[in-house]
Image 1: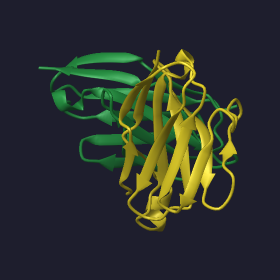
Image 2: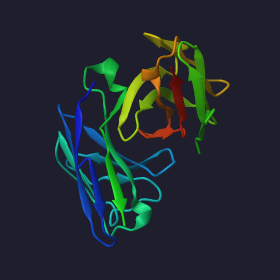
Image 3: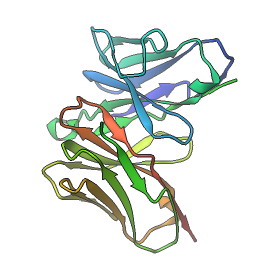
Length: 118
Length: 113
């Protein structure tokens, strides 16, 4: 398995501002994933962050709106820029299992960051 | 494009009942399927992972089955308890979809005393 922590756990922000969410993993991982869960919706992948290269964004998500950093193998940040009420969601960080080949296929999630934009 | 559907959207049962949650997916070319639970205001907890070559996986009172050809998975919960109350999500990883998980919208389960 993998132990993932996120900061902040929740925040209330004003329209037009930006928020940076941090994700820390207890072991080194190649890929880190950022998901969004809008109210009443299922989770959607925003982007995949690889250390040493630019993040890969899914259709409908752009780097200007959701810049991602990946400075090392245990840490990543997601910034939600120029926020609007439509960005109110839970943002979750995810990684593959780190306990060996058998666990690699399993995906684990952090506790999430609950963002409310007024 | 893969689509995942979960039925029912909500379910309320008395304690002790056995129950089945359903998950269907439109593209059978999957690499694996994973079941999660999500407690209110919390992240996701992985329950069971089924590889595409497997038919079922068991963990304690939970049993998940996979019928890839028909695009279906079920999560069976035996002898339900109030602590099982949560939203249950299934997610599939496609063979050609990189590492992306496609999620269903979940089944909200309430187990009553």
